[in-house]
Length: 250
Ligand SMILES: O=C[C@H](O)COP(=O)(O)O
Image (cartoon, rainbow, N blue to C red; front, side):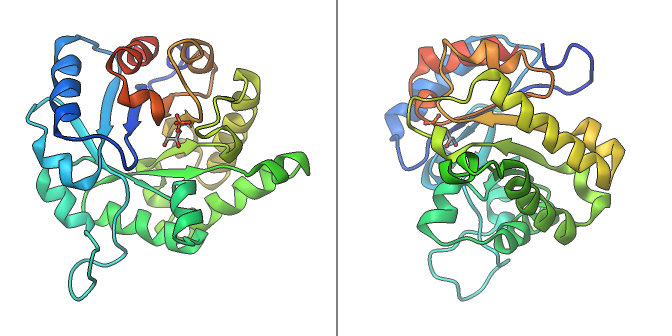
């Protein structure tokens, strides 16, 4: 099990993406509150407009993105400080859908991670390769470049405050998850790469796997030595499925 030989507490984060409604907020809140899982952090990242509708003190919430800016004339943006004021603890930055839909560069993602830390939010920094990069055998170089932008922007002294999510783009929403071995290979690489910058951070940082995780494949993925939980998309919208995944990580 991922945390059997280390002190990393697993996280299961549900990224609702642009899905859900107030009814789902109620349903998920009730079902998450109804289970007692002492050894996993369960985080829900609904669309921003629904964050405040969650009314459960024990529930951890996260934003799906933040503005680069703190405040001011930036129509449509929401700042890290605003999410922090709502009680959010986490924010996803650099999800591949934002990198694609909004042309977010490694540098922009790194600045968002920095903005999150400044306001006391834990950034869940997403990295991961598209299929053609994997087929070209360049996964490690690609992921290293994504990580290096963050390391150089936030500085090694804050590195251990991050959570990393490895999400191979070809596995997102496709039903074709990485195999546990493929996930572990990249997770180990990420941990070793971070450890080169700061050995303590390399050991402490939680690295989540994301990409077609479901109730059937979660246990095998989470059993890998460097997999500390998951970032769950589609399955986070189905209460039974999501709870089963949380149980697998517990
Ligand atoms: O943030 C979540 C990921 O993009 C995974 O999505 P998925 O579980 O629907 O493949």
